[in-house]
Amino acid sequence: MALERENPFMRSKEGTNLEIRRLEKKDVPAAKALMDDVISRLPSQDLFAMDDEDYLNHLVDDQGEIYGAYLNGELVAYTALAFPGQSESNLGREFGVPEQQLGDVATLEATIVHEAVRGLGLQRFFHQLRERRARALGFRYLFSTVHPENHVSLKNLEAEGFILQFTRPMYGGKLRHCYAKRLEE
Image (cartoon, rainbow, N blue to C red; front, side):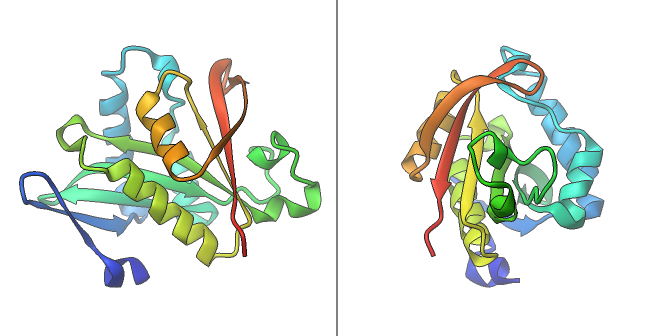
């Protein structure tokens, strides 16, 4: 896979290497456990819309890609890119994408970073990785949602050229800023 050829490692502050690789089905339980662990320490559960293991498996199987960062063989961060197609969960409808173009939509899904590796630029690295993958796969629209008080994520999305389109309750009433980026051909 091109990821390994490009840069399978990312240098941490301590000089240790983080291995970055695409997750497989066997890695999903570790991703779910990491999400549960990190989310349990958030000041508010509204800050994050939890995914279940079935959804993560769905992404790994055929409706997206999940990438993980490993430190000494342990998963310490992951990020997901979804290909929602014509499904009801396609954010393109929220953004007014015509039905016949919903197949051109990719979505930046959850990014989870354990506190032990925060501050290394992983979220920004993951944004760039997912955008490169979306472009390579021919997607034209890239969308993301984020809680208005998640300042780090907001800053990182905007630094990568995402534009705030609107704010509304989503995911069971959780307030979200909704961001878009058009991927030019």
